[in-house]
Image 1 (cartoon, one colour):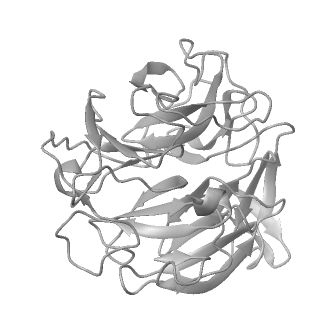
Image 2 (cartoon, rainbow, N blue to C red; image 1 turned 30 degrees about the vertical axis):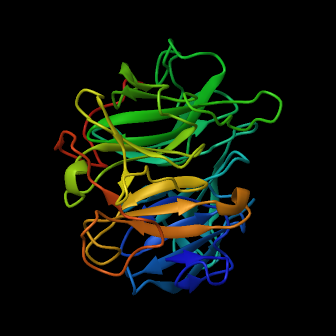
Length: 349
């Protein structure tokens, strides 16, 4: 759909370099780690367009991103004071936020944690308020912020998998179906980077209050897992599956969200596993943006020196073929969980 490389996709955008986090509002927002910006797109297969909005991220290198609609996470900019509409994480330890009413062209720093390396971000609404969850790859812990951007003090057991090997750190976090899922990658202590390799990954499930529920997935096909989402209802046999995308090899692995049973990788029409080079995020499409049967993906192609934003849809779905091959459903189970990015529940702080 979109790439910074001319001729690679239908739309060329030089700002789309190493795109990480995706967030869906009325439009699709993309964190461009390679250019320190957030870019915005509308439409779908054959109709995607770049929107005029473009936001600079202080400190650069935005990674995770969430859309927010509420009265919290207030920021003050040159245009005024307003609640954030989109919030970003950064490996610099900064949590930044944007509102057109505060500063149309720039995000504002809301929180900063020295030494933190935030690779992802999730927002969770509970009956005790709304919180941000930010996995610090350097600290090996999930950090939590309230809607004033204040860091929440956690007990040692909260959002901690005590069975995890010490060489693994939280790489990303998502709120899915009323639970918090944390993806772990092996961390190189010398470089601070994720170590790719088949079997290098875990996914653990927690309650909204941070209590460990279970190890959802261990090793096997996991390879520096980062993306996590629930497949849309129109996604063929994979509909309702919990999808885990590997940064290490680009595979998208499907699991039954109720029991963690591995359902196999998404496959192309020729039966081969879908493998997206430099895969980062997966975001379900909407009727207006991409289609309700599709998944948007972001990828840092060319060893993260370039970028690709594309669509994956079931074989046989209508529309122009996407920038990535379409997966063919395999003969697997068809889980249908309830899904919400805004679960209820309370933190036990």
